[in-house]
Structures are given as structure tokens and as C-alpha cells.
Length: 455
Length: 164
View 1 (tube, chains in turn brown, yellow):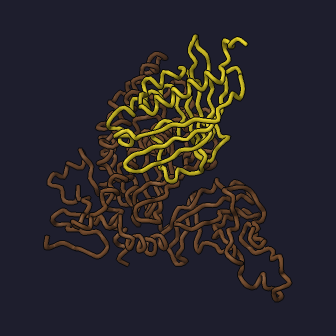
View 2: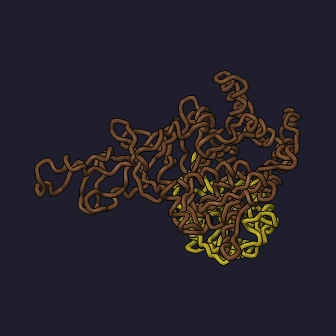
View 3: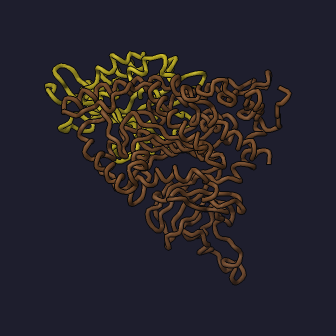
């Protein structure tokens, strides 16, 4: 261990002896959280919302991101703004509705009126101020320093000197394209954004999204359910004369892992596992139906013609290879620091932020092709809950696992506790990656986390 | 007045719903699901979406009989980690009234409060409930149940792994 590189920021690495560990203090110590807020959340691009949430000029919504309250608004000229939701006069909360349409926002405290572009329109006692005061003093609602979008996904940045969002997203852009291109006319957020609290540090949730080793153990009941669905579905499909041989693989965790790692192996040899700037993503062949656009015997045969047609249209647009990747693979995209997009039984967009080390607020949404038929939309919304959401058959068990870990970290300072994520760093059997995967994806995140905190 | 052969009375509704709460609190889920018809639905919209439909909005739960049976099956396993060991619950349903009789059945509305105690933490789920009840032979059964949570985020509850 004499090669050990230890630094004050919670990650210790010894490449030669194959060791990569994260201090449990990174999840419990308020000093770390403060550093993260300052050095990560005030420097990185943070997902804010989707273009479709502001359907027309005057549309607005209020949202808390990175612990601040904002108004997300589209002005009369169609331009999108993110404005601090507080009056420049005396700090009253300017907009108290969740969403709606308005040409102006009036602060209820003293009546100052602002436009949907944030500009100050009216001071009730204007005569009490010098000539031109309203326009000269920059008294409009305070805008976020940087606001940029990539294909309808709007991100904010507190650092006016940050690199462009385009550059920041680096190799993650092509994975976001595989989501955005599921529609020819634009994706839309479906009503029903789900916010919930998890009693664990935000990084545990992000880590969980990259962690290959929890899948078999944490989600065993999901795989058993999946197998039951497939069994019933196959009988139904065969009864209506549909061949299911192509889908005739065991819907087991083992089978799914095989597909996942075969796919991962390809990306790893192309060195695209690490997409740059701390982002990572992976695709693997789906062993369930996908609302865009993959019929599977777990779904009623009546959906097959439409889903097959969607796939044909996709092939015409993008060619066989990319179309099959979009339609028949599940996609996990993790954008540093706190955005996850999971595209499996539906598409889940999720962010997480901690204001105390031991808890986080999770915000999640689902998104779909705007032109989707009512039948497939209904199927999508039903299917989502097969795994996803706070009452799905998968997500709550992830929550249980990370909450249990967080609870366990209490007292970790007594024995200088470290989490071990060394798997795959220096494998004695290099082929073990194919069979078991490794923790390399998590190291992509932690290496970038450490880099930001050290700067 | 004689009891109607098809309409469910408030008294019958109260008996059935009280039984449901008792079976849920005792985790007798196989007996509980027998209170439901084959074409049942159990809906919990995303909090803050009172007039939403599961066909156009994202829900927390949108179960038909098939998925409900699988939810029960899952909750009985020790590998359903979020409910192992089972949390301790108390279901309270009150303010019940018969709101309407329509072709689908008798509509009974009320309010619910469900407490969930696990690992030293007590979470409360509060909201409005709407039942659709039907008579099948001598039995009164639940055809649908919709629980609208009176909150707009699962804060601090975080998840909904018990049946409301």
C-alpha cells in the first residue's frame, strides 16, 4: 500500500494493488456537502426541465433546483428563461403557483409587477422614485447566469464562465439523441412529475444507477415477476398464432446480465464507457416490451402491428443498426453530477439533490413521443410501473438498499470506514468482466467527483 | 324498505371496507385480494393530480387484477426488500358516504389515513378514497379503489410499498 494516493477529498486509489475506495464521510459529513455545493453544483450544468413543459408563450412553472426556487418561463416572444423566484424589491415569493399561463407575475407582498421575461414592468409607487429608476436599476427578476438546451433538455449553470452545455455533455450527446429521436416532432413530458424524499445522500442514488452488482440481489422479485409476465404472455401470443421463439430466452437476471455485459464489452473496447466530464451510459438488449418500439411476448399481441410499424419507420429514418439500438435496447444515461435517464419500461428522467448529507429530494418525470397513439401511450404508462417509480416493482427496493447503507454509515468515523469499489480495477481474470461486469462505471463518477473537489 | 339486489348500502360498504383495513393491517393479502372482482382496478395517482386518468398521466400505481396479484405475491417474499420485514400499518377510512349508483356499481367516497412504521420511522399517507362496489351473489366486492394522496410530493414518505 505504499503506492497509496490518499487525498483530503474522500477517494483513495492504488492502481497497482487494484484498490479504489470512497470514504463513508463523503455521505455523512456536512463539510463534504458544503464543498460539493460550492465546487460541483455551482460549477456544473444541472438539468432543469424540458422544453415541452412550456408549451406556448406565457407558459410558466415553478421548480426548486439545487436548493433554489426558480420560475421557468417562456416569454411572449417564445424565449425560455430561468429566473430566481423572488422579488427584487423586498424578496417576496413572486410566483406561488406550480404552473400555468401568465403574461406578468405580480409579487403579492408589495405589488411589483414583472414580465414573463423577468423585466420589471410596474412599481405601484413609481412617483416615489427618481425618473427612469425602474429601467435603470436592473430591478428585473434575477436570471440564472447560464441557461442552454440540448435537443429540448434545458440545463442551468451558476457559473457564468462555464464551458458550453454542448461541450459539457461531451460523449453523452449521442445517447441523448437516442432518446430525442424517438419522436419525429418532439418528445413531451407527460403530466405527473413525481417528487419524493429518500433518506440517503444524493450520490448513493447516482451510484446505484451505475452499479451492476446490485441488480440480481436487489431486484430478484422484479425478475421473478418478469418471468411470470413472459410465461402468461407467451401462451397468449402462441394462442393467437404468433411465433415467440425469437424471444425464447430465460427472462432471468443471469440472461439479462449476459446481454448487458456483452453490450458493455463492446462499448468498453471502444473506450466510450467513460463519455467524458464524468458522464457514462450503457445500453443492453431489452428482455421486455418497449413502448418505443419493441413488441415482446410479455405484451398483448394486439400491440404488435403498431409497434412493428413504428420500428419500420425508425429503420427508414436511421437505418437498421441505429434503429434497433434505439428501439430494442434499454438505455441508462448518467450525466454528471445528478441526472439519470433510464429508458426501459418507459423513460424516466430523474435528478437528486441533498440539502442535508443524509437525505435527498428526488424529482422525476416521464417523457414520450408527442405523436404516440393513445393506445401505446396507455400501454407505456402502465408498463412504466412494472419497474419504475416510488411504487413500482424495482425502484422502492433500490431506495431500501441505499437508505439501509446510509443508516449503516452512522459511526463510520469510529472505524475509519471506506466503501470499496475496486472490482475490475486490476482483475486477476480479465474475462471476469464478461461474466460479472465490474465497478468501472462508478469509478468514472468518483474520479470526476474527486477532481472537482480538489480544484 | 327492502335491500336492493344490486345497490350496495352504506352499511354494507362500511362492513366491507372495515374488513379490508383489518386484512391489510394483518398482512393477510391472499384473503384481502378476495374482496376484489376479477375486473378490478387499484389506482393511486401521482400526488397532486386529483382529476388525472392513468391513460394520459403518470400514476404511482395502476394495477389490474394481474398486476395486483403479482404485487401480493411480491409482498409475501422476503426478497421484497422494501417491505421486509413487513412494516406495521394502521388503515383508517372515514367520512364514508354513498355518492352514486351507476351502471358500474355503487360509488362510495371517503377519506383515509394510513400509517406505516418501519425501522423506527413513522410515515403517514393521507387522502381521499373512492370505491366502486358491486354485488355478486351474496357477496359485496370491490370493483375499483382509487386513493388520491392529499399532498403533492412523497415527502418525507419516499415510496409507497404498502397497499393503501
